[in-house]
Image 1 (tube, helix red, strand yellow):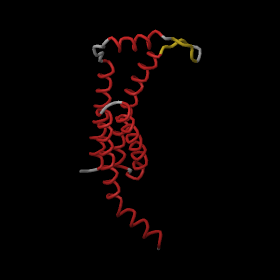
Image 2: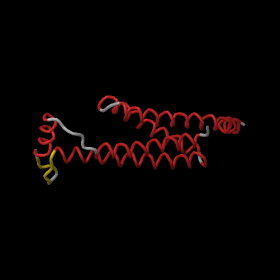
Image 3: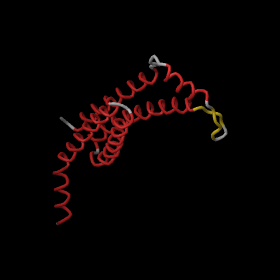
Image 4: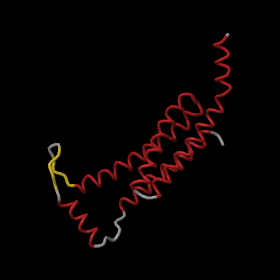
Length: 153
C-alpha cells in the first residue's frame, strides 16, 4: 500500500477516536452511591484560580473536551500529511515522526490510566504511521542514493 493510503487510514482512525471519545464523554453511566459522592464532591468543591472560581468538575469536563479537540486536530493533520507525503515526502517525514511519538505517548497513557480502547486505538494509528514512514523511506531510497552520488562527484 502507498504511504499516503496508510496516512489516510490513520487519519480516519484518529477521527473515529475523536468521535468515540466525544460520545463516551457525553455518556452519563448510571452511578452507584459511591460514585455519586465522588462526582458531587468534584462539582461542589470550588476554588479560586487565575482570578476565576472553578470546581474540580469544571477541570474534568474541560480536559475531556480538550482531548476531543486534540484528537480531531490530529486527524486533520494526518490527513494533510497524506497529501504532503505524495508531493514532498522529505518534508512529511519529520512531521509524521512527531505525530508518531505523540501516538506512542498517548498509547502509554491510555493503557496506564484508562482502558484498552484509547491505548489500542493509538497503537493502530501508530502502526499506520510506521507503515507510512517505512513506505516513504523505501520510496526515497533511490533519491538518497542519487543525491549522495551527485555530492561525491
